Length: 370
Image 1: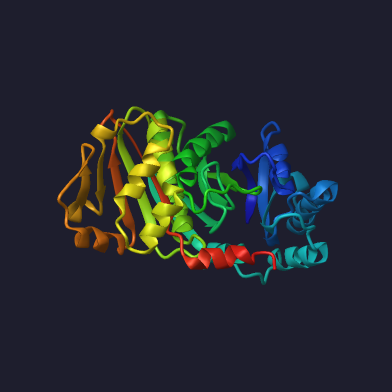
Image 2: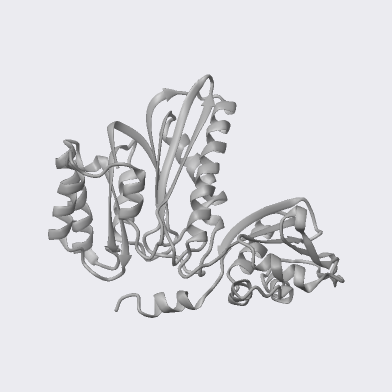
């Protein structure tokens, strides 16, 4: 990803304590005073994680090679890697690859970039939004990859987002952090968090939107919409997945409680396999909520499946209803599967996205490195 001019940049990274070389490199670069970024270079197939000093040197070399080709400075280039942990980058292939993607004849476009960084993904993930702010049209576009090792606190996912809006770097960082909490940190495939997770946001500053509260709120809303779109694409394309699952928890005392409950349901293998089999086993959903650690009252809980117009309530204020099981089963065969849990404790709510577990997930991950 290359810009014609230096951009303000922001980044959000994995919270895994074992961080890949490109994550450490990018964090150092973005931690400097007023960093300016011209490009992002990415490789797939090798994570460049747990690779020691040689791995750090190779991450810097990727930036240097890209900077040379684009006629900019190495500290204006961010680096992304994804793939197998514990292997050194094949720098001969990397060198050749950078020469190819920075040439005039390279394939261009977000779709091409999204395909290039796929690992176990089955499809590229791209999104774009245009929003009017202060009489100016602002474009926000992005692409992402991710299918496994997906869990809040980010996951084996990479995302690069660009905008032509003029926004100060510190505001850009705060905005991105807030949006990631509501999008990429609201998805889970398998409960694992990776070493390489990175979301980058580059703002070229070509379109002035002002720095009013209203203007920044409008930008943030559009950015959140785009990031949620990409996040849901990642969850839907989970390794071996056949269905997207949307879990909404409402009636919570606060958002943290709602997220704790929703996240526990989303990572339950029993819930995910029930969805895969089209089995509306609501006891599994309720049991996951009960073991979440959140202080819930079983006598206030209401659980429903499906969209509002076809919703089936299976549990009301802690007791089973006389629902028709065939109707609930039909909703579990639908894509997406919608699960709504009302805790009856307050006004806070949140939504998370996950996917079902199939035999294909086991097949993919049982032989990932062999």
